[in-house]
Length: 177
Image (cartoon, rainbow, N blue to C red; front, side, top):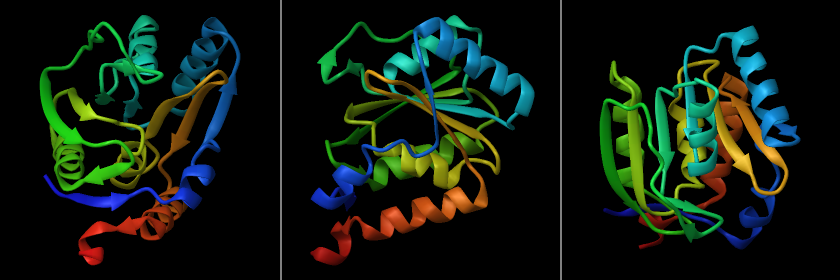
């Protein structure tokens, strides 16, 4: 496992802002609006990043093609989320980094014909960027925005370009060595 990217202090601030559309409200409101958006837009697949949002999608009968979790919520250990995945992959991805192991797992999982769960030893938050970058065109990448709601990122070519710029701005650990 090698760290490929490391979060910079400047990007830490920028990435607190939603990467996509923020759906605010209670659990019932956000999940209802999210389910309606999925039914309306019919994305080629849904990818969830985060334990709470992955669990909540299951409660509304939305089964993501890929779920990326770390068995933590708000940095506290939680009961492992039960997911409708046919395959589970374990990766290491330390806090504030993106590892080659995690990148490869996301790329490989998106090529699978089955639903995959990636369980991260470390932190999964930044893997949203990799999920958007490698998701099929117009797929939805969904993650939680703490104390606010759910963020839906539509993986358009423009959004993939935006993510590529963010990744380029991150400290490239391989070059730094």
